[in-house]
Length: 261
Image: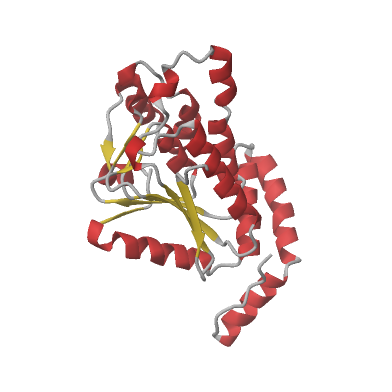
């Protein structure tokens, strides 16, 4: 029987909490964990009930230590190692194309490949004291795969510093660098994550999906191309029932009742 090293559960608010659950490996992103994480995210993508995904960890100090270094140094043929590397870009692309907001609840250190996971998410909530970074260079590995995400989220010179020195930054510095949205004391952390997730889940699932898909599709386009594409997406949004419902609810001073699709 396959060990459940990624847990997934959805509550009555449509919050799907996906928990990395391999504390003995510090949630190393090995093949099995990545495969289970892909499966959990894809299930959330297909579920009508899920409105927002929260990624977190069962480890008391580590969100994830990143890639499995033992696997990197193993005697497995290079061609087999190369074939398995697609798990990382597939994961980052899946988070971007999920059609639902993904919150990284960084309740422990976020390192190496997991740093890429956090940067691929839509929102990051960090517990005060946790650290972020890509220390791979210290053991003779360069953060090749996540460099694309780092450069899209962090100033170039600071990105170079993180990748070339391999030093970590704490949550408060990460906030100053724009790498996280909120830094929360440990005693308030779980409640804060729940509050943010519920606030996101209360929005229109349909408009959120259209919006996230539009952002994902246009972020690397030229301005002219992006504006043309976004104009079409806005026109499509005007055809939805949720826009009318949102305006009516605002006018009537009541909570909107969104369609699930």
